[in-house]
Image 1 (cartoon, rainbow, N blue to C red):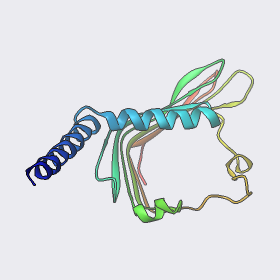
Image 2: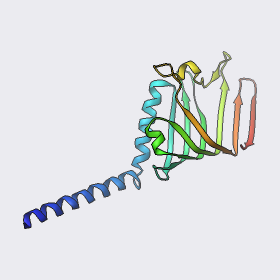
Image 3: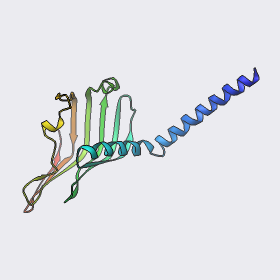
Image 4: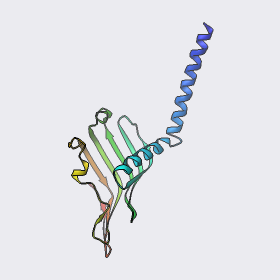
Length: 173
């Protein structure tokens, strides 16, 4: 009987140690940010010329996330530049909807968004964004996407051409 108690106690202590080590890696050591950045960039590398970097991830994963220092970079064979930067992005959702691949967000709030668009010497806009034919799935159906409330504060848009630049600052929605 004593042997069984020792085995059960050892398994319980081992489980607590493994869970504690996972928590330390994911949160204080910022392992969650590394995993998300790597997966996101691997997905985007297959489909586009964008790269995303997320500085930190907070909030509870069940109801919502808070992303800080989100940077989107565009790069092709000729040019590379920062397309968008947001100091803080707050997203509120239902995990049940996401689990069923129903992209229904209760709230998306973006603070201090900077968007950069430029025109190259041949007159093309950079970055080139996806069109409706690029976003359809293999079955031809568009993905379900809904945002309940969208808040944007202190945004700016920079549009650069070879001859001049247009800047719009302090945009809030």
